Length: 335
Ligand code: ATP
Ligand code: MG
Image (cartoon, rainbow, N blue to C red; front, top):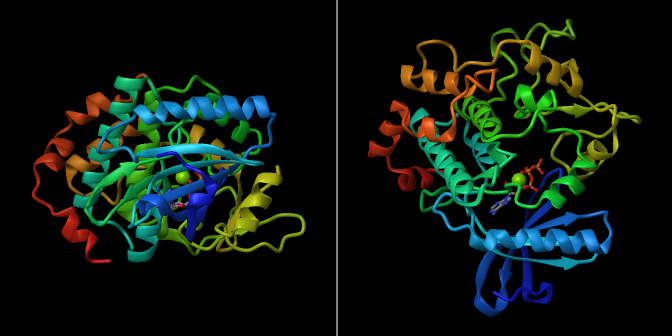
């Protein structure tokens, strides 16, 4: 594709995140549906060109588990990245619509993400860096694919400057400033799988959502799946998902998340991840032992003990996921 902005017809807003916003578009000359990500880059032209060059690596990424790349171009002051459109959206949107995801589906998600991560790392030496449900996409053919991986060091830097917020999938070693490795992605996968299986963000515990007096207690309320309020000066923006609050979140350094009466700053959450035991796939007995064990292996706090994506592809839960006849295409038809 020779992509030009004037050939792309806007069809629908798909969402917005820290890095920018995403629209469903049609590439009119070829009638191809695409997702166009618009990233505002506050950087010199030379840096922008560098980003664009680095993004070209994605042209060489071909895997059933990776969202295809159609091209990127500058559209001042933005960089536009065009990619395969996933018609069922991201897994965070899906569980927020239909509730907790069936554990058989979750096992297929684990399989797909591990395949994607292994491909990126083995073939291109790329570490994803941003595994979370909103970066795992699903389509009506029943395919699960990952997107938004960190191909461009310059892009990572540019966005990092303005980044505050959803660092909640970050591994303990990353929070403490250690080198990023594939194992950091494994941690993020573990957190994401619990979130999908429970239908809520794991650093919260639904068993005690009446206790909202103790601010150092994270139980019960902090969850991106529930409406949260950003406490900002002035404290009026509501809901994490509006573009405005995303912008505010980026601007504000002293941001805190509030839900159901409890307030926890990003800093407190990060401290919690570093200091407290890792979450588990609980309550015990609700999910297959294999699933519990797999997630446990992802969430070893010490990266030396944590498994690599390659190790985890051999795990019995993943072997089972590969063999099961569970029909994802049929499942996609149910919502
Ligand atoms: P962050 O910016 O913090 O990574 P995010 O992943 O939610 O958060 P974006 O990457 O900007 O933010 O994506 C916004 C939303 O657009 C996603 O939640 C997803 O639902 C949707 N989306 C992104 N890419 C695609 C795609 N290729 N096909 C369909 N929907 C997409
Ligand atoms: Mg994303």
